[in-house]
Amino acid sequence: MTAGTGQPVVAPPAGAVADRVVVVTGASRGVGRDLARVFADHGARVGLLARSRDALDDLTGTLTADGADVFAAACDVGEPDSLAGAVDAVAGHFGRIDSVVVNAGISPVARRAHHLPIEAWHDVLAVNLTGGFVTARAAYPHLARSGHGRLVFTTSVMAATPRRGLSAYAASKAGLEGLTRALAADWAGDGILVNAVAPGFFDTGLGAAFHTSQRLREQVVGRTPVARFGRADELAAAFLFLAGDACGYLTGQVLAVDGGYGLG
Ligand SMILES: NC(=O)c1ccc[n+]([C@@H]2O[C@H](COP(=O)([O-])OP(=O)(O)OC[C@H]3O[C@@H](n4cnc5c(N)ncnc54)[C@H](OP(=O)(O)O)[C@@H]3O)[C@@H](O)[C@H]2O)c1
Image 1 (spheres, rainbow, N blue to C red):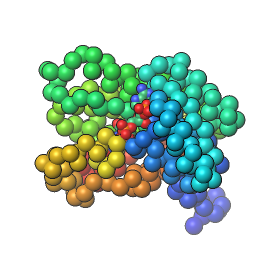
Image 2 (image 1 turned 120 degrees about the vertical axis):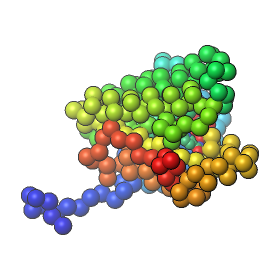
Image 3 (image 1 turned 60 degrees about the vertical axis):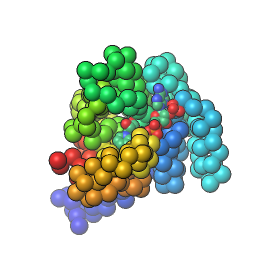
Image 4 (image 1 turned 90 degrees about the vertical axis):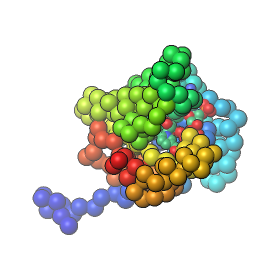
C-alpha cells in the first residue's frame, strides 16, 4: 500500500512504545500496576507514581528484576506541588517524558446523590478530575518538548452510562472526558495528542468490588453484549495504542473498552 505521495505506508505496530518514557499515575496497584508492567514489557522506560511508597518499591523491584528500566516517585495527585515534583523527578531521571497515562482514581462510596456527603463529592472530584488536570498541566512542558507527546486519561463507562449511587464518580469521569477534548484542542499545536480510555468492568482494582456480590456480577455480565468481564491485556492494548507511536492522527477521543456495556 502506498500513500497518495507514492511513499510506502508502513504504520508502527500498535503498542510501539520502545524507548519512550511513559509515566503511569496510580501505578501502585490495580489497572495502573498492570499497565506499568505492560509498558515495561514493550520496552518503554516507565515512571511510576502513586502515594504508597512500599507498593511502588515492591513494583520497582519486581520490574527491575525482569530487566525493565523504571523509576518511582511517591506523590499525592490531590496536592499540586507534590504531583509536579514527582513528574519533574521522573523527567530528571530519564531526561524526558513522552507519554503520560493519567490513571489514579478513587470511588470511595456508592450512595444515592441525596445521601452523598458534600465532603465525599469534593474528595472524588479533587482526585479524579482536578488531579487529572493538575497532572496534565505538570506534564505539559515535558510532553511539548518530546515532539511526540501523548496524554491518555483513564475515565470509565460510568461517565456515559452511570449505575445508581455513583454521582460523584460519574461526574468526575464525564469531566475528564470533557477535559480530554479541551486539552486536545489546546495542545495539538504542541504535538501533543490527548485521548481517553473508558474501561467497562475488569477483574482488577475497583472492578473487583463487583466480585463480592453474585447479583451485581450477574447484572453486569447480563448487560454486557460480550457477556463477561474484561481482561487486563484487553484493556492494556488500548492504552498501548493511544500512548504509543501507532497513534498519530487521533486526538480528543474516548475509546470505550467495555465489551459493549455502554451500548445500553
Ligand atoms: N478496575 C476497573 O474495572 C475500572 C473500571 C473503570 C475505570 N477504572 C479506572 O481505572 C483507574 C485505576 O483504578 P483501579 O481499578 O486500578 O483502582 P485501584 O486498584 O483502587 O487503584 C487506584 C490507584 O490510584 C492511586 N491513587 C488513588 N488516590 C491517589 C492520590 N490521591 N494520589 C496518587 N495516587 C492515588 C492508588 O495508589 P495509592 O493508594 O498508592 O496512592 C492506586 O494506585 C481509576 O481511574 C478508575 O476510575 C477502573
